[in-house]
Length: 504
Image 1 (tube, rainbow, N blue to C red):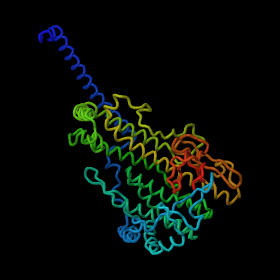
Image 2: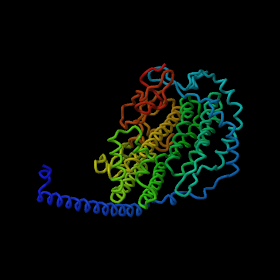
Image 3: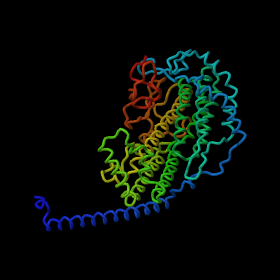
């Protein structure tokens, strides 16, 4: 009976020849793919090198950056006096806005007291008393960042290990600038508030030379913090025309899109170091995936464990010897696409240009086409690591949109101060009140503007969906009970900040 189950010799020979043929075809295909990938990678690198692109992180790192050591020590000593109170929430940050009725927002400066994040009511006079002991140390620290160059640059070590002890300290400086700036605005110390903002702009300007994505994220966070002070001061009309012009000039120097392009270049250079480690055998694909938290077996089903073992240990070997160059090329090309997009999203709109920047797409695609099934195997590292970089470049575009809104708002208020009304078109601000018309980085078009009578206007960016919704003020995220919405938490990014619903 067992003999009846044995395949006849003819079928056994046929099965053997078929398996052998399949193996030969597969081997030829894999060898062809390897050669094709290596050739395409080398060709693309040569092409980009002729255009001036650099791929070695040592060429992208500024060395021997001058800074004032004594100023560094002075700032560190002064900031120690108010860093602990900030960390311990002794000096709580005022919320920057509250909603009074549909379509109207009030700043925290309009009231005698405000509600903190814990729901506690805080009196402005008590707040002023709380920060008074730290004002002298703050003045010294802010004077240092305004007039001296302090150490903000990253120290690069072997294997591209970064030491970032300065980032938390400088971020605390920005947090204190927001607190002191709002208090100064409330108490009528306008020049002191402007100095606090200028100190933050000085830090942001110095940090741009680090050319690494994590620092760009810190710069975006710093600008988001001080933006509360900017918005409150501009909207409550506490600045004179000359002070608005100073603020405009400081904001106009900020070009997050250009700086993010440089940060992405450094991220690409760091990624190429990791690809070289994989190629040289100094690390493995499973180890790299573990660093991204992929392939963890805790809580996985039996079938998932088997699938993960096959992916890491079988396909991982094929990936190294066949698809590594494909993956590296895709990584470089997709980052180059994002770099080009950042650089083409310039700071100003030129109506004479035939084409404008394309929308700042967020999806992970290859040439605008979603990754195919085969691509997901050979672009294993690219599909894993790149989405995070996509998100941070979009954050830069969103923050730059907010900066551009503030620049135009300052120009509009300067115009209104002189003419007693707002212009019909933004082009009327040029050149006296606005040297260039900033674009909306989220779609490459000019910022949208509508005059509403002589005393009101609506200025907005298209927001996260990158579509013009006509100044839609619907909230993106509902606030928790007892809390106010975060600034610019609407479908379109509006100035003045508005919402289509009441929040009590």
